[in-house]
Image 1 (cartoon, rainbow, N blue to C red):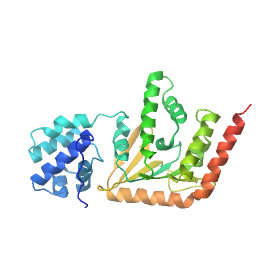
Image 2: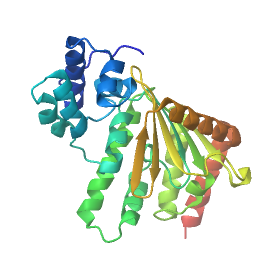
Image 3: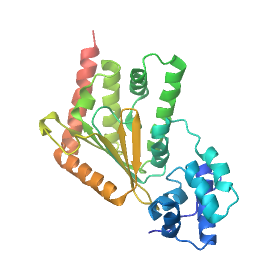
Length: 279
C-alpha cells in the first residue's frame, strides 16, 4: 500500500486529523493493516482516514483514542471535521471528491452535479422539495455551484461521465435552462476538460440498470465507489466491490456512443431546446 503523503494541517480539520492519526499510528509502531484490525476495518480504510479522503466518525474516533492512547484527541476534534454544507448521506462522498485525481461517473436520471449550470441545479433542488423556503433552495444551489469549481483546475481531476440519454431529454427547468445545460456540457467537452459519452435509448438493456455510481481514485489512498439512491447514499472501499463497479462502468463505456457522436447529439439537443424556446 502506498505511504500517505504529508498533509497540510492548516488546510482542513480532516487534514489535521489525518496527519495526527498517521503520527499517532507510527508512534505506536502499528501498520495501517494492524490498526485496522483493532478497529475492525480494513487497512485501506485507515489509509483513507490518514489521506483525508474519508471522514472520521465518532465511533472510530473513540476507538482510536483507546487504541492509540491519545487522551480523547480524536473524539474531541472529529466533530469539527464532520461539519459540512452537504446532506449527511452525501457529505463524505462530496469531501472525497475534492481529493480525487480521477472521477468516473454514470448518471442515469439527471446531469451530474459537477457539470450542472446554476439554473439547472436550482430546478433540481426545487423539484426535490417543492415546499422548501426559497432561501434554503438558494443555499442548496450555492453548495452545488461550489462543487463545480473543482473543474476550474485545467486537468485535475479527470472527469469521465456516461450520461443516459434520458437525463438529456428530461426537461428540467424549462427549455431555455436545458439549452444552456447542453451548451455547458458541450463547452467542457470541447475544451477537453471532461470526457462525456451518451448511453442512447437504442443501447437497450445494459450493465448500469441498477442505478447511478461514481468511482473515485486518489493519489495516495485506495479507490472508492459511491452508490446513490433516493434519499440515501453509500460509500464503499471494499476492493471487490470497487472492482465490480469499475467493470460495470467499463461495460457502460463500451455500450455508449463515441465521444464525437455524443458531442454531436448534445449540441443538436442544445439547438433543439433553444429553437423551440423561441416564439
